[in-house]
Image (cartoon, rainbow, N blue to C red):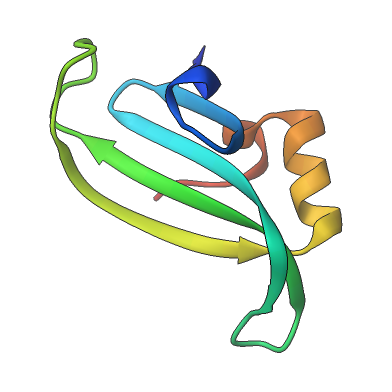
Length: 86
């Protein structure tokens, strides 16, 4: 796992593990998730075309919303240690 936070403008934390990248953003204005929780963090997941190269294509991406407590836990424990990518 590699810290790539400096490559993502506005990210509070970004980590790359092979062809998978997780990027955590703190929202300026919170948003409600579909289950009604007030969320202050947005986690982006990008999967890349190449796990070794610095220059590659983003094959797909997704994002999820997280509460303040969940986001702070991710910052403390690490992104890949906090979520499961299936």
